[in-house]
Image 1 (cartoon, rainbow, N blue to C red):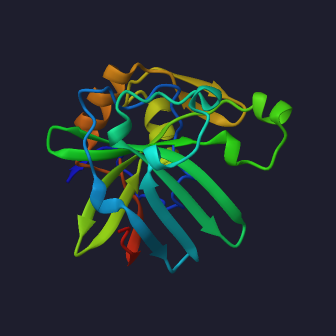
Image 2: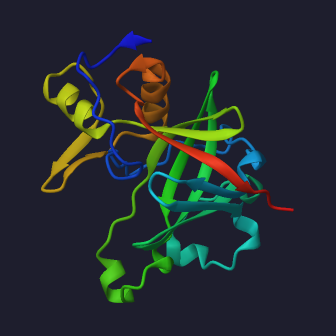
Amino acid sequence: MKKLFGLSVLVILILQGCIPSLHPLYTKNDLVSYDKVLGQWGNSDEGEIWTFEMLADKDIDFAAEAIDLPDMSKAYYLSIESNSGKNDFVVHFVKLKDNVFADFFPVKGSSEKSDFFNLHMISAHTFAHASFNEGNLSLHMMDQDELKKAIRENRVRIRHEKTSQGYILTASTKELQQFVTKYADHEGAFESELNLERMRINE
């Protein structure tokens, strides 16, 4: 792999160390069916259970959730359960050249917070490079710390805003696709890895 950031990579937890984006990584033309993710997956290191289902099978107020759904047949519902609670996401898989990426978007309705509280929360997309390795699902998130450093040093250029909680990407979907495609195989870009083992296949 090519060297992008020039630093050792800090491996951090999935969905905790990535940079969020206001815009999705997908358009209708880029979405792919990825039904082999359906079912339950386990992360023994963190004690998590990831369950993928078809979004069309779920009872969700899509208008209230403000979810961009260009093709319902290629949209997935993900529940992540752990000792600390349960979090739900809508997931789309995007094929860009030879790479498949997962776009995660939180389902606010799954939160136990009040509607007024949720109104103040801005939902954002996060991305992962997705692949299968000997039957296991591997997700590689873009490393936030290394990307932030590269942005500060002007080694990576992508539209963003800096907030009190960190960076948020504001680039368009087209720009995001060009960015992840360019750096998909660069060392240090998608190094925050989570491996999930198959537990149960949905019938």
